[in-house]
Length: 148
Image (cartoon, rainbow, N blue to C red; front, side, top):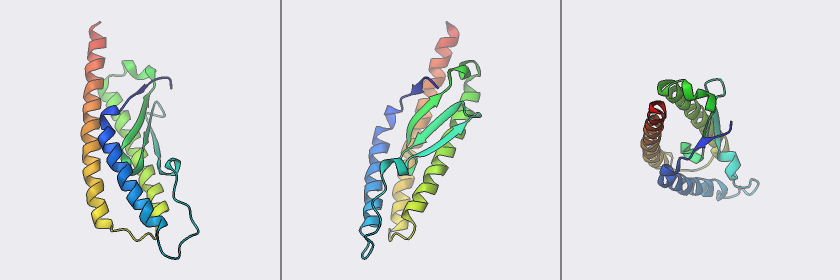
């Protein structure tokens, strides 16, 4: 796929997610008597998903914040509701992939799960608001293109 949408409006959510990731991985690697595993690298914490039979690809960083979104140009004539459906499918698949990776990497870690969950819910809400804004911007751009 050739082009992507820059989710730069989500930078504060991404920064918060990275801060939480640092806390979580610090708790994982700082366990007493556990010196056999290195901290997970950024690539291990990226979730990937597709939608619309691969026409939309999404990547999320740690804790589900949208990192990249690539939409196949052939979808430009499909309409915004179809594009939005495929985008949601791809983002949800990427978030599920990231959650599974995170669960694998932090299994057995002694982390305050309740506090971390509350923080992650706030980050997720911020990311979702940014995602809604991005979809609105995409819809507006598509309408402007349709008028030409």
